[in-house]
Amino acid sequence: MKIIPLSEGAFTIDKTKIFVPFDINKDDLQKRPLGSLLVEVQPFCIITKKDILLIDTGLGFCNSNGVLQIHQLLVDNGIDPLSITKVLLSHLHKDHSGGISKEDKILGHTFLSFPQATYYVNKDEFAYASEKGSPSFSPTEFQILSTADNVVFTEGNGKIDDYITYEVCGAHSPFHQIFMIEEEGEKVFFGGDVAPQLQQMKSRFIAKYDFDGKLCMELRQKWWHQAQQEHWTFLFYHDIKTPLVRL
Image (tube, rainbow, N blue to C red; front, top):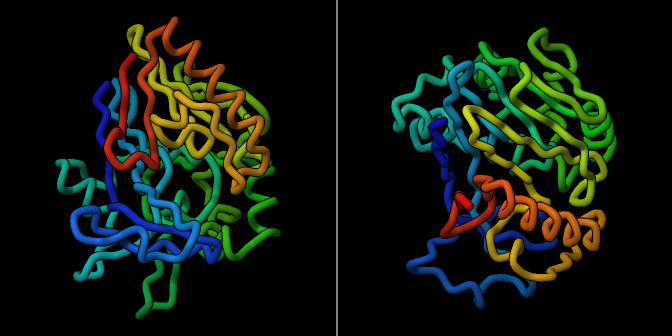
């Protein structure tokens, strides 16, 4: 497998749930509102024998030319966005789902950002996020999934094409799901926002922003132990310095 981190940059976020760009070489975190978190926003593209996968879709921001940032990042890595075959969604918080669709402001029409791909999203997560709404969720960006033909609403735990396992773990959000991709003995694990950064895997950290912070901590400890036994590759969506770790 080939793993390509698609870094959209570093951001701070506070209780307003607004993602503010942060330059780690110039900006001072202490000058941001009290309690601001510093995070990377980093979807992943994984090239397997069967697919070109995209895991989560970023913030949905566009560059100065009006090009969706995640599209530009794929192109910069030699990948045509139309070649993405599957989009795996851990949950629908706006920093993970913003790139699901794009609005054509001239035509007033919203379309899927990856029209050739099949989108996989948990059915209960979709219902919960649609009802909950702002500030954590932006339903206008993912409601198109309810009527699109190329969407699979997953329920519970299961497998996709016999090599991608999905499992509802909750913890960060009520119906958050994780993914394990296995090919030729290699195991690539994406824990989304339950396992967002390397340092959190190594400490007994409980975050107030999680739906169930204690469960998050327990799952991280469980996964970290299992990963060392089975030599997983971790993908960290919010880690500034370490997008992936092979154990």
